[in-house]
Image: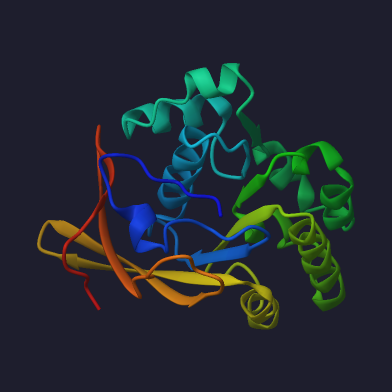
Length: 228
């Protein structure tokens, strides 16, 4: 198991007290629903519990990522310096990927990206949307499953609508853990819910609906009640 608890929230406990070794995890949601914050919280908790993480981001530069983590009170400078966290921004590659049909092959051949125990790709759909088809997506999933067989945990975020439904379905069906996000505006607040659709091999009890909010200088806060 790879636990990711921190003292100030119960997120790890709500998600079965950690991720089983060799899991493929897919988190799907729309733009702005909290995918990046959830993966940042999970990554920080994993590193705090002595697990090395590679974080591949299509969303932020290194400076932007560091600023974002500190704005959520997830101080990661020492982890970067001690190589517990390898952060790879791929924004320029995403822009170039539109004209490249071999991007999935290039991703799989970058062995140094997959050396750590946990690999987060936020978002996989942005990385492969220009080069993905059924055959290539299946090849990529098989590659991830091979890494799972070596004990590595792969965490992928998928933005709703970026890939064809057939490709989304392939990622969902291949996952060991599949979660989706829902958000609802109520007055001046945004109510967010993490829906756990599938969780294979949980050590502890897994909440099916986990309400949360995101607060500056606090980070992810688990709500007592969830919004369906």
